[in-house]
Amino acid sequence: MPQQFDRSKEDLGNAIHFEHVNIQVPDQRLATLFYVAGLGLTRDPYLMVSDTNMWINAGRSQFHLPSGRPQVLRGHVGLVIEGREALLARLASVAKKLEGTAFAFREHNDHVEAVCPWGNRVRCYEPDAARFGRIALGIPYVEFDVPKGTAAGICAFYPEIMGMPASLRNGEAAVAAVTTGRNQHLLFRETDRPPGDYDGHHVQMYITDFSGPYRKLLARKLISREDNQYQYRFCDIVDLDSGKPLFTVEHEVRSATHPMFMRPMVNRNPALNNRNYAFGHDESSWAMGPDQYEG
Image (cartoon, rainbow, N blue to C red; front, top):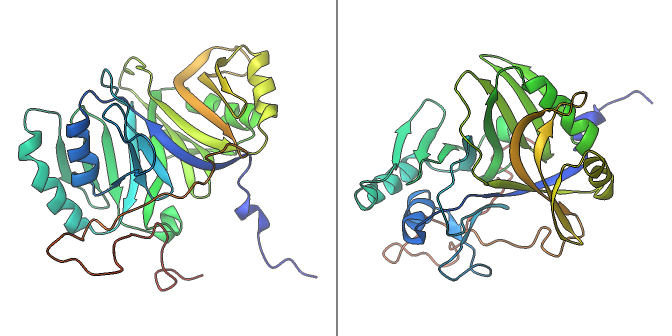
């Protein structure tokens, strides 16, 4: 039988879902204004509902925002969210309340860049199946700024140690693109800018071969924390030959048997308010409808 399909296009490798970015914030109220009122995302109604932490749903992924000294990711987070004009109106509506902070937003050709009150950058894109897959709301990538000459080594680290496919892209700068789930990536873009000090923020993903990477990380003394039966952490991405650290960011690694794997997340419709309420339209779908892409 002749081969009809390129089956390799559907390979994910070991990582099956990127779930959250964790960034400390010093003021939960200001964070609410930016992530909920401004971006139009949804505070998780089930977990972390006190005033010391909040989890912000973005489709099937999240921002985790515990209280503490502000942390700034060295790079930016990509966010797919529908409705550029509505997004711009929401961001403008919170601008006065966020005066005196690092908050800003700016339109670009293919995205809107919004900056949180402490300097974290979020690039907001319209849904685009060809570019981001069939999501209408979600986090398709997190991009880190890394030193010149490190992308190739980072690209080698993830397949060998974590079983996660990676490719080296070359455009304006070398970029290591690591698959962390369906249409989800960690991107490591080389830059001439001096990297800022690592301040403890982290990213989290679920993997299927949980013990294999653990043994390889342990052999290289890279395990930084043993959380529980379903979760461990590491921070340093290293050169496979020399062991020299190439980039540092904490990875929270969870098994697919973790109790919270793929738990349901509520995503509100940010266009709805008490003046235009329409019954049955409270929730936004994280996925495109069948009329929005060619399947």
